[in-house]
Length: 498
Image: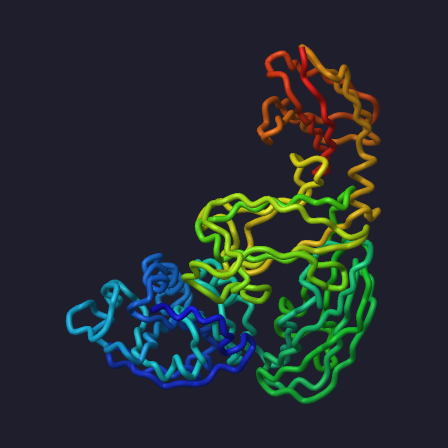
């Protein structure tokens, strides 16, 4: 019965349709009136028969959000719960007695926020599945979210533009032009954002600067006439970056003044790091699913965006993050709590990215299991180079194959490592040379990836060093010694044989 259609509904960033509705207690609510008070409205549209809706209701995430930020909290937000199925009557909200369809329990008991029975609101927001949850900002823009915690809902609410003062403008809805934050060789970015008037005085002039590592690379002079919550799009020229750093957009003039009534919304910063580098074109991808493996999908892409490989549930697809609940299958869907290993054969040295999608919008870890993804060089399947799993709807990672990035140079040159004797018997000697002082950790893993020997982390000065590991307690077999320096691992294979 759950509505699991994979079609888009009211797009995020749209203007929310207004509505006037009466709750179960007879109180009337007008959406635009609430927004005009500067409140952010969280709208949850559910159905009494919907198991994911009932599970989210019983998580009390919305209850906690309302208690902290509703009228009894800081007063900055309002929550409205809507039963949006036209087939169910009001009695279904109170339980099975008098319900003309299916209900999973009493939705009213203990609920502190207003409950509205209205399929009209569901239709106005073009609902295609339950539950559908929206954060609606005071400027009437609507953003669909997942079944998030109270903290995550508040984080989204804080990104809303809120009017205050007279001469006040802000920068919102920033996009770098790419979801990737790891720079391999060269990464093309094309930043854009929204300039919004948040003051009672009309906005007629603004100067917006784009800075890379504190150096201004472009300045845009905007002029026009924006009333309260009026919005203009600012688009910068394409810009290429070839190393890690900080990208910042800065509003330097508002109506010809070098500051305005609320300067904290006048800047936006995004960090970029150097991409990890693989020394082989054979990359091992290891995935551990959570309790909802069918929600996972991934794609491997080259630097032009062409899809080279993919896996997981094709019904979710590359754009299906954070939208669908209750998914139990689909073409290519993974099982729950299972491990998948896939060899990715890269066609040539160059820059690549891997794109992960979670249909529910809670990543692969850690709300419903300890899922993850990890990428390894195929010739060293024990030392992960890229890993993740804690994200929301999407996670995009860039990496290089045979590319000399600053990260790969650092990792390869930071340590000179030698082991002897090899094969080892009762002990093995580790010789290494550091170009500079570093904090190190030393461990040994077996062919199953289990750590079987480890020394406490230590700090070593630049120069030559030697450590002795007692391998007499280890069974004969193949092992890897891992020396970790400032996050860059160096590994060597060795054999124990007596």
